[in-house]
Length: 129
Image (cartoon, rainbow, N blue to C red; front, side, top):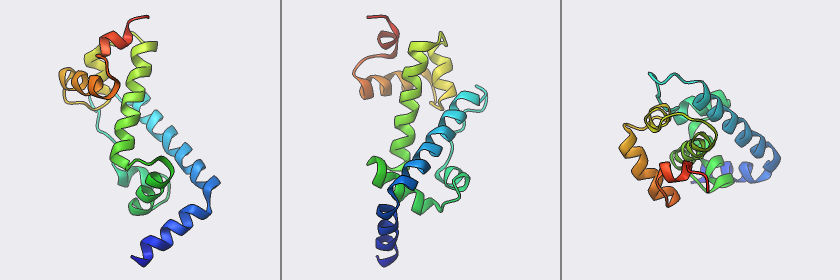
């Protein structure tokens, strides 16, 4: 549609501004994952994030896809696993705590997805080489 095409043109024309928005989005996600309490591991929605960045959800999703090749949902999943890898290497948090704090329904589900995404189980990832 015309509005989508216009939006895409705006996205292409402001590459540096886009990188700044993606940077702010990454900081927002990092802050979320590093400050949540294990009792309330609700994941941020695209509406929450777009609102924090003063963008419409549709524009933000288009911008994210253009800059990263990932939709909001895919990028959120990517960031969850990047955070999980960091915590597995740099903390002694138990696997069930990591899974809970990153919004997975249980440690077994997290472990299956982690292995699918990275090629190795979380406990093996944590082990020193």
